Image (cartoon, rainbow, N blue to C red; front, side, top):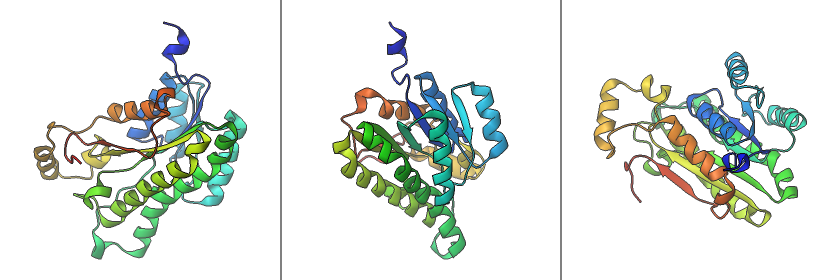
Length: 252
């Protein structure tokens, strides 16, 4: 088997947000394995630098606030100058809020929507023109089961942000399909990250496991496998799809 077939994304540039987190790091490693140069975007400066250094020369760190449109514009310009145009955008950054409607104040509502939704919109705006010019591109959004359930354990702002991100996925898919650009989402439920291991109690975790037919939480590498599939050349006929990754917790 040739090296090119071993690395189906050789020469492509990927931008992964939330790259210093568990899921973002797993996706970054998968895309690097497939031959990408990866721009790691995260707000945690020191951790992002350390991760990029550990991953090697094809992993480049960029730290900026994705909820700020000016910061996104400037950050994207730095990435494009360093790597060339972005071929694959993985909008993975997100923050969790467990507060329900009466406990959610205006500041929390805006903060969650700004990171989980606005950041994906701003970055999509930046990468789309060059993708259109090349008539090729992949946009992959990390959605959530919470968008369909209203939030089993997640709060109001989080659930709404992920529902809106799902709608953004559909809108981008419809608008961009004729330019060779696909837009898809991944809808995970209960990936083994600090959101599960630290922000839920043991009683909550055990209750969830009883409701998940496969009887376990999703591993970050399983999420990353779906990212690399949607980014691959053979996924070009899939767009406007949100892939459930929930162990059978919701079947529709």
